[in-house]
Length: 160
Image (cartoon, rainbow, N blue to C red; front, side, top):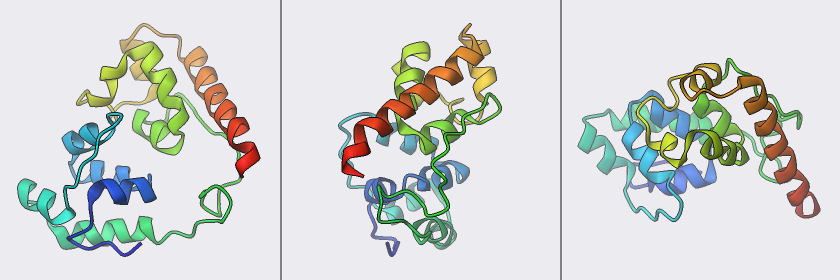
């Protein structure tokens, strides 16, 4: 995907979920929270969001190109380096888990509520801290996240 200032942010993220981390690293937390809401249809362009936040569109495009040009396999859209192993730990950032394994969002919503995705702290804290803040057993939480990912993969198995 060739990223330009006229590229729609939602299309970039849809085609390359790893781009979410680039946006978050560049301070676009509110935008990412808005786009993660189910059913959101947003036509906001990269140039528009950079102008709105005073961000350097050239630098952001360069960062996004690195993610968007990463090799993809023909099988299920996973990066070719993906071994298929599900790696979720208590030390991972919350956004790292949900970006890498979208199926884990159901577990986050179960324990933390759907509002967790719009919380300003989401993505800045690790899983262990998030569980501590929500009085949740971190080991059980991680186990359920892994199970959710496995179930999703099994359901998609016939199409991959």
